[in-house]
Image (cartoon, rainbow, N blue to C red; front, side, top):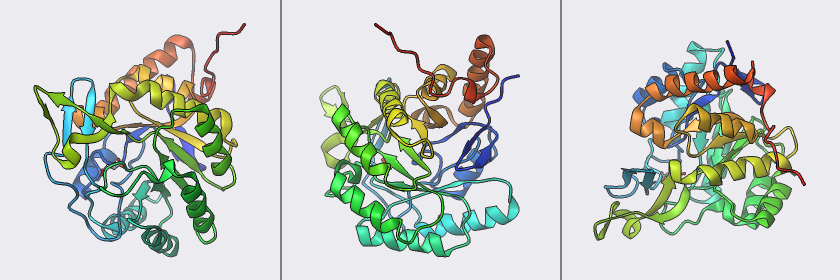
Length: 312
Ligand code: SIN
């Protein structure tokens, strides 16, 4: 039977599938549901210092080929997630979980990361540099100078395993420039990609979400080719110590297979998890194992990053 086990920063996971931050992770009840499912682990909703209500509703809409959202970082505040993770770590010392966070300013980001650094948290931290939905706050990772400054400052005090959640990039030069920055730092992983920011979905003559006159992050089937391109572009450019988490357009085992083929060590499920619930993990895992068995692959290492090109 093929195995979908994986590891990130040396932490082992029984399965390479998990939720994407933003889906099934706002409350402890939701996180527990993911933890007790076939998912290999979970990531929390991106935490800010204080709890936030987020943008006005309706702010998330499933649509036929995916989803559109402008949630605006609603969350329970860092203490809520950190306290839960610290308790969980006592209860389940052999399991590792991801804590997602970002401040509403650079100062706040440093306060959050310093709190995590000073805590007993032993898991993986994901710094979200890509939320497209807070009015007036651009996606940080589209500003290379700011990104480099933040990472320089963060790694002057943060010693725990840290990764970053990235927006999609669309230009080879931007892949090169971003990778040159990330390669300067002891990042554990990059997560490619967050939603494609600021799309519009229209029904009849109207937008479908209230915030920002309907502009929102696009997820689901629409974004798989972009997500795969980002996973592979960073797999080709980053030093091998920086692992890739693939996120975007994972509806089936075939989609997860393609993310791994492009170089992902872990695969996150967002829109599909929202549409289908945690049963999606069991289904997608089973589908992935069937593909692996058909191809004679026993582990993810047998095909990770081995995307074939058309030569000549
Ligand atoms: C949101 O809360 O607006 C979504 C978070 C994200 O896209 O990073």
